[in-house]
Image (tube, rainbow, N blue to C red; front, side, top):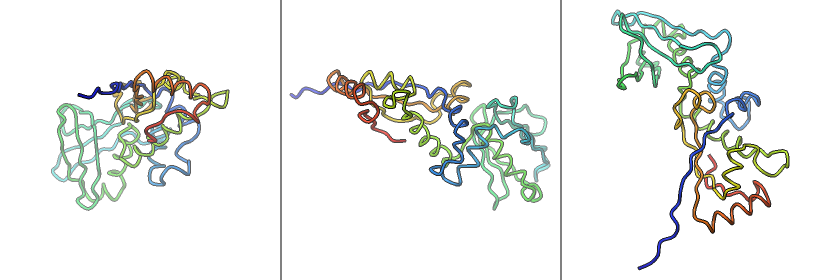
Length: 236
């Protein structure tokens, strides 16, 4: 029989302050961010902006009154909800506008339940259907291109250097690297709480601990040489 090595242990940590940093550096204007993702990130980070339209109403092709609303005060993440006819408002988890079919498809709570509404031509041509998607983005419901951009920016965020020009400026990252951990991965929307969504879009990072010997070596290298010697097994 052969002895197995030390078991890897993962520790999860939130990305506190990430959204504040993104706004402070106007991350949507960075060259490293895909052009398609830039307006989406700006809407998501600025919650649409001061003059952003927060409600769209129309009558669908079946004769039902449909109302989409971005709920929450300006500056808060809030959420997107839909009211169909006389039913109670329901929170939207996902939404997509399909121009060729002239429909809005969305996933609602509770359930979740999927539904689509057939949108009149004039609503699509006016841009109202597209604006429903923009409201979803302002509520943090983001397409993959924006998710990928945010995960890459999360890496930029944690490798910022502190006052010594060597170690991480992010206290939680410094704590784990100084303790011998290695960045393992970023996890999209894992912290699905109001605070987590507002501070980091729910992104959580994980650190791997791989046994006393590896941890001691990694900690010593980081404390001596800073981020240049840190162990990162994930880049986004």
